[in-house]
Length: 149
Image (cartoon, rainbow, N blue to C red):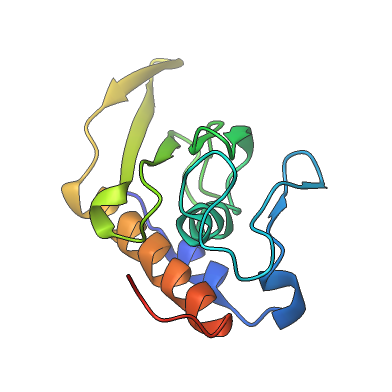
């Protein structure tokens, strides 16, 4: 099973000034909310977007589309597991900061006989990652001094 202990490290202390201007770590350019803005120009919630980027930053990003609200990671192989890897797709679906405005899909493969085979993911893995993204989004909103929707 996936030990997502590395996800817990994503919520560590950061420079507060960097939280109000999310950055696309894939491209190294600013693609985020403007100050305390609640929405990105494409119509997705900026805090959910940034919360997802921050939470998934331990994995290599394959693509990140702030306008469409889609984050796709590349395969990530936990250091302690050489025969298991994961990929995540996160979708920010709404302008409002609500739990149903976020959809997360986790894909898992194990290596058998030298070939990667798709296999099931524990339901708690997906819900744990979703919870961490939502928690991070709430932290970002609180740090900007905004009240919830």
